[in-house]
Image 1: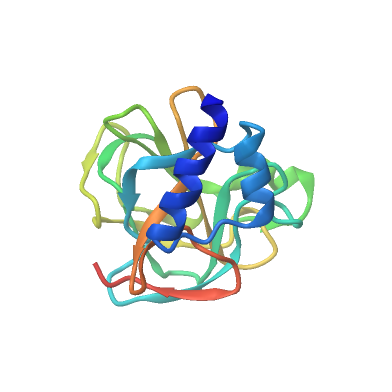
Image 2: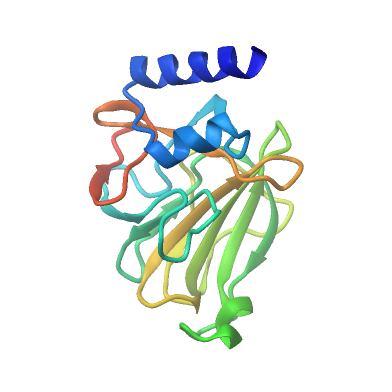
Amino acid sequence: MKKFLLLLIIVCRAFITEAQLTDTEIRNLKNDKLKPDNSYIYNLPFAKGSKFLLIQAYNSKMSHRNELSLDFKMRKGSKICAARGGIVIATKEDSDVGGLKDEFLSQGNHIIIKHNDGSTAMYWHLQKDGVLVNGGDTVLQGQHIGYSGNTGYTAFPHLHFQVQNEEGNDIATRFYTKQGVMYLRPGKWYKHNQ
């Protein structure tokens, strides 16, 4: 009964906030495979005024199977901004290679930021020398932290954004958008207005 009530609350809240959950996400909620982050609403992870196409979202059939992550198609050198404030716990910016071979899996330049609730946000595929922060730095929501690239396991330039809780489980995140607070949908353009 508790699971049903929790599901009912989540589904109702999704409709109220205009969140767009897919049938797969709803099934995953029922089976306790998807834990939405209702405690925080994120900014889009790029510069104010920028607009980018979301090409992959949660549990997509391409490279995000069983993964709650988002891919924004963007040109190399696009500004990446902190979707939420926190402390930088890891960075990598020395790679200049990328492609769809297993040898590139560990070559993705990235920034990982830990939030005050213990969750972490990951920003992947940044350009070589495109990280503007260091481990231990405190960053603010909206702060310019790096530049997009095409490093690691990737077919084209884009930003891979993912949030995990303290236990390392992926979190479905809601964002401030021009249309209001929502879960993002692939195939749609999103503009940062905050």
